Length: 355
Image: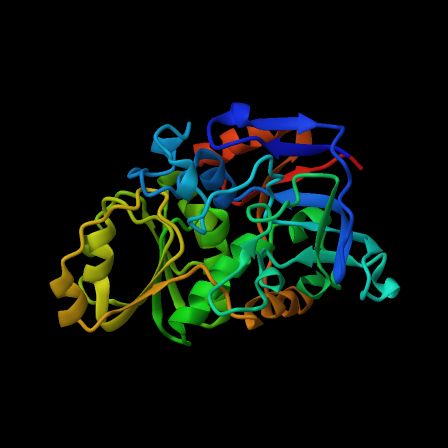
């Protein structure tokens, strides 16, 4: 089959498009999926360049070639990856074969795969594998996944649209779930023009929250059109625009130099949830702000079981809709990742394997 192999941590030369990769064989309780579309995500880039390594101190753009990453802690889980690896956390496709223990009637289903897989760690709390990281993923014509974490979806969406859901929307829904966002609350979302940010805007509005988004100036109108109540241009003073103690909850995907302002705009008793640090993981925390304002912090990677099933329900009820910016043939993965890292596009970039 055709697939893209990641041969190690580093620059684009670590990605190899091949057409002689063996088709995976589904084991017990697994299904084989013919991939129709696979979204590009920050985690794919972060894993390739080794950004998760504690030796990397800057943002994703600064670590673009992976220089300085230590292989032994360069995955999101903090453990070394085995190579070659087929990446791709977002998968939409059709089940074409099943392993033992799986009903053959599932063959033919159009499905998406839960990107944070729990079957392989026996559903232990706060443990999971990421599709395309700890096991091979969707940057291929075929992939396999646990049957119970592969969800049939009934909707009229395109395969490309469905492939935009798993990683971005589950990350955003996980943040909202952990921070317990409620109707009428003031929510601030950073990085709002990216896949996770746009998902967070939609999902926060679904909860009837009042959303302020932060996005690059040229993307302000697009983010407003997708439901944000107001948008602050990236780089503007957050405190000057919103005022101190004006926000109930911050959903942060950026971190970086303006991080301390996020705590300044939080109300007393406010909640801060984080699932990314594309502007840089090292921040300046005044611990007095944390404890004197009785703030709650939530690091959001692990997702409760209800998160992904909820997303499928939202899709089937027409309550959310992804934004797709561009599609690419799988062989053009390097161009797709370069475009992703340029941050020029609002919405998801999606790869299409040979059909």
